[in-house]
Image (cartoon, rainbow, N blue to C red):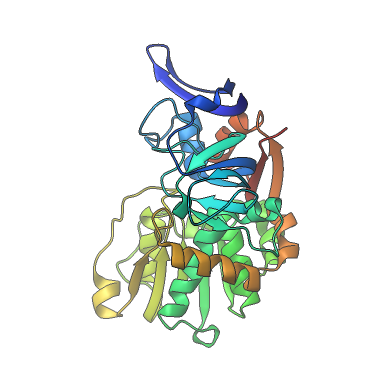
Length: 327
């Protein structure tokens, strides 16, 4: 038996609770992992609270991230004793995830824990930080350099935004952070933001084209915010879109794309190929100031994850939440 959060849906309704789970209930997979830590991401918050149609089968263990030690394996990709990370691949949605003391997974879903990170540090980064790095890699791939101007990061006080701000600042970019929480201004400046703007400036309908400002962008918000970022991006600037915290709608015109040559790049962290995952984690090891991780993250117990999920969905959580599944 092991402990985990189990989401159930039946005639009694939709609910999440910490339960003792029999190992025989684990799904099929090549690798059994003894989990040390997981995280709470926006998607996990939606799953645990039931406020979004994230979970596709029941019962479900949520948790799109985990770090732990391989207990048994029939996969050529890892062996017992290996320390591994998992991000995405639909775990916590269609396959049992990381908010439990054990997980059974496909071998090619796992990547080695980089030597420079402790398990807690890896989860302070987690899917959010790895997604942030995929955005940075996309900006680089499309030729955006620090000399070209400011990079705007929306939802900057959240998990993706916090890591994106820290990484971009370390790489020499001028980062302008956008947040709906004025009290996080000092936090964002300590991460490396040169300026902090209010979300209110972006959250309502604007003009098809605004004054050019941004050389690039990392957007986790979607909806009008993403539209307004695109409308104010410089000629041939690049906008990376990786979230929908304020909505999945995109009420835009084609003006920024056909009149200014703006590029909108979609960032998918869930099914991202293994080679790109390995590169993202390698770059995180090189380009993220590890000392910032403590500032970005807080650690909670497995039992605290359920009430914290509601706070996360309500926008009350700064940065990253690490879950120690063994306490």
